Image (cartoon, rainbow, N blue to C red):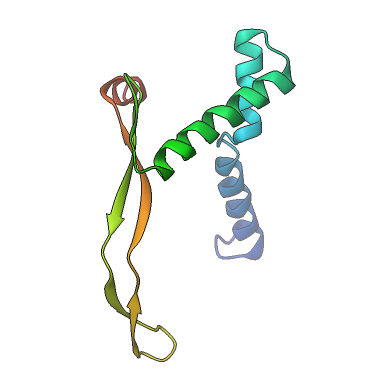
Length: 114
C-alpha cells in the first residue's frame, strides 16, 4: 500500500492517539491511590483533591512545596516584556506574571531513568 494514502495517515493517527492514552489524569491517579491503599474511590479522590488544593494554596502565598525524594513546586516570576501581535506585527506590552514550576528531585529522576 502507498504510504501516502489516506489509510496510512489514519493508521498513523491511531498510533499517535494510542500513545496519548498512556497519560494519567486526576481520576486515574485517584483510582490508583484507592487500589494501593484500600481506600474507597471517593475517599481517594478527596485525598488527591486535597493534596492539589494544599499545593495550590501554598504556591499562591509565594512559598515552595518541597517533597523529599520527589521534587519541589516553586513559583517563578516573569518580568514584563515587549512582544509583537502575530496578526498585526505591532509591538505590545506583556505584563509581568507568576508561573508555577516543578523541579524533580533526585529520587524521581533516578526512578524514571531506571
